Amino acid sequence: MRTKTLKKNKINVVTLGCSKNVYDSEVLMGQLKASGKDVVHEEEGNVVVINTCGFINNAKEESVNTILEYMQKKEDGDVDKVFVTGCLSERYKPDLQKEIPNVDQYFGTTELPGLLKALGADYKHELIGERLTTTPKNYAYLKIAEGCDRPCSFCAIPIMRGKHRSTPIEDLVTEAEKLAANGVKELILIAQDLTYYGLDLYKKRNLAELLEALVKVEGIEWIRLHYAFPTGFPMDVLDVMKREAKVCNYLDIPLQHISDDLLKSMRRGTTKEKTTKLIHDFRAKVPEMTIRTTLIVGYPGETEAHFQELKQWVTDMRFERLGCFTYSHEENTHAYNLEDDVPEDVKIDRANQIMEIQSQISWELNQQKIGQVFKVVIDRKEGNYFVGRTEFDSPDVDNEVLIDASKAYLKTGEYTTVKITEAEDFDLYAEVVS
Image (cartoon, rainbow, N blue to C red; front, side, top):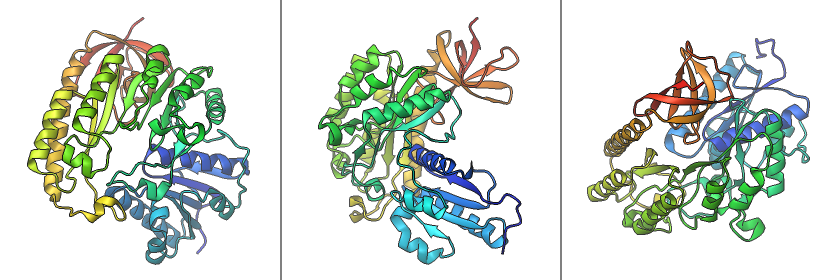
C-alpha cells in the first residue's frame, strides 16, 4: 500500500536512548542533507529511520515498541519504508530480522555508509562536524571517542560499540568551530569513557590537552564533562578545570556501587577506599566542583548489608547530583553468568530509598544557594517561566533555574545573571540581576 501522506521522500529520523545516539542521529542527518535529502527529526516523513537503544531492558522494550509502532504505520500506508539502526540492531539483528521481518533493512552501529546507500545517499568522508543538531541551539554534544575497553561485568556497550577509538584533537576542534559558527555556546563532551581519551592515538590520557585546545574556540562559553571513569582518572584535567573559566566546574563520573565485594564482581578495578579518596581529592583540588554520579542497585549478590553500606556512603558523601538505576540482567555480559537473585520489587525499593536520601541532600544544598548570584543559560520558555541552568547543571538530568517570565524578558541561548530567591529539591527560583 502506498502512503497517504503528500510528504514524499522526506526522511524522518527517530532517536531513542542516550546522548551518544543523539549525536549519531545528528551525523546521519548531516550526511543526508549533504546528499540533498529532505530530512527531519521526529516529525512526519514517508521514510523512517529508527536509531535504537539496546542498553537495558526498559530501553530495549521502548526500541522494540517503537519499531512495532512504525511497522503498523507502514501497514496502514502512513509510511513507505522503515529502517532500523543503532545499538539494539547491532546486538540483536538476527533475532529482529526473524521477529519483525517487514522492516526494510537493519543496520548496526558501524554501518552508516550502508544505511546512507539504502537511503539513496553517499557517505561523504570529508564531512567533519557537519551535523544537523537536534538539541536547543545553545548547546550540543561533542562525542570525543567511540567504544569502550573497560571490562565492567554488567555492561553490554563493548558488544554494541566495540573497542575504544579516540577522535583526533584537530578533528574535534574543527567540529567545535563549526558548532560555534552555528550559535552553539556550550559543548557537552561525551564518550563511553572520557578518561580513556587519547590512549589509542597518543599513547597517553590526553583529555586535558583536548580541553586546552577546545577552550580556544571562539564563541564557546562552557565545556562540560560527561561519563568519566574512576580508575586511572587523569588528574591534570582538574588543573585545566581550575584554570580555564570555560571548563565548567562539573564532572559526571558513574561510580555504580561502593561495596568492595560488588566492585570486585562488577570488575570496576577499584575499591571503596580508592573511590572515596578520589572524590575527596576532586573536592580538595576544585572545591566548587559539582559531582554527578550514578549507582546500580540489585546487582547479583547484593545483600541487605551491601545495600546499607551503599546508603550510608551516599549519606556521607553528599553528592551534588545522583541518579540510581536497577540492575538489568544482560545477555553476553560477564554478570549474566551470575544468578539475578535480587527480586525486582526489592531492586525498585532500594533505588527509591537511595533517591529519597539524594532528594534530601539536594534540598539542603539548594537551600544554601538562596541569596547567591549565578550566571545561567536560558534553555527554553515553559509556561510562565524561562528555564535556565547554571554551570553546575547539565540539560535534562540536573537542577533547573526558573525565572518568572512576567518580570523579565530573556532569549533562549543567552546567558544572564540571576539571584536565587527560593529553592526546592531539584528546582531553583530566581530573579534577574540588573
